[in-house]
Amino acid sequence: MHIITVDPHRPDLDALRPAADVLLAGGLVAFPTETVYGLGALALNATAAGRIFDAKGRPADDPLIVHVRPHWDLLQVYAAVDDTMQSLIDEHWPGPLTIVAQRAEAVPGVVTSGKPTVAVRAPSHPIARAILDLVGQPIAAPSANRFSYVSPTKASHVVADLGDAIDLLVDGGPTPVGIESTIVRVDRGGLTLLRPGSVTVAGAVVDDRAGSSDSPGRLDVHYSPTTPTQALPARTALSANGPGILIGYDDSAPAPDGWRKVSLGSRQDLESVARSLYRIVREIDDSAPEQIVIEFTGEPGIGEAIDDRIRRAAGNQTAT
Ligand code: TXA
Ligand code: MG
Image 1 (cartoon, rainbow, N blue to C red):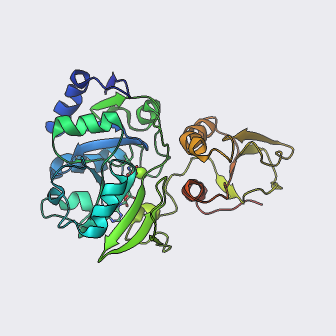
Image 2: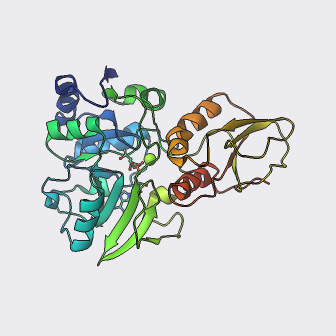
């Protein structure tokens, strides 16, 4: 795999041209978005998009997110853009909101896993925007991790997970948000929250059918470390037997004997907690402890999105 390093704030278009060339030739390119690194391929090319599933070890029934620029003709990807979708787009794009709605004919079945709907978002990261501009067509990109593992927030995470399975990696440093986009489904004007994220959408009803086939990403096995991992209710003292690593916050109760506490930072700065969550979980998982316990934030807003990822990392298992 070839790696090119690009300034995330003012990306050099000449430096990014090889990435666009690889994509236009049907290849796989990993690149930073504001949320996590994505593994991109041409969305409207079934062969190219199909390679993403092989590289990640992703099951064919788990559909991909298609990335666009907000000003493009969205009827390339959607069957229609109704008023509800348009107001979400106007308010949140470019940014970490994915909108699921009826797909256009042109979107290959491999991208949507044969579903009548497609998930689309317009990333705000300057490198992702520049790559889309250079390619000039929609790019399918799931998170650039091996299937079911923690999403990558640094280029080294992508190298560790996907290595030679991809053609090119654009290293733009750590991703600024750190957790995946909010996903909402729009049908007949109704909004369903399929995955919480840093963007909160007023009026979106939570889809609590965990593991529902409507959004396979909600399966509990997602985002899991290799080490046995449990979640701890917020502001609770751990009483389980060690040894292990307790991941908490600056104001968490002290770790009991045999446990080492690692702080994700202040519960008052949850943007920063989200930014470092996956990096810290990966670092601790790499150090192969006996077990990991991660305390929920217990906070609303982005705290709910962080707690969703903690719940999944723990495969729904709660410590006491
Ligand atoms: O922030 C993000 O969304 C990142 C960056 C790279 O854009 N991407 C990402 O992709 O997290 P991925 O594939 O790891 O998660 C996408 C989720 C999957 O769980 C998938 O099941 C769901 O979106 N999804 C895709 N198409 C869908 C559809 N038509 N209906 C319901 N869920 C869908
Ligand atoms: Mg993913």
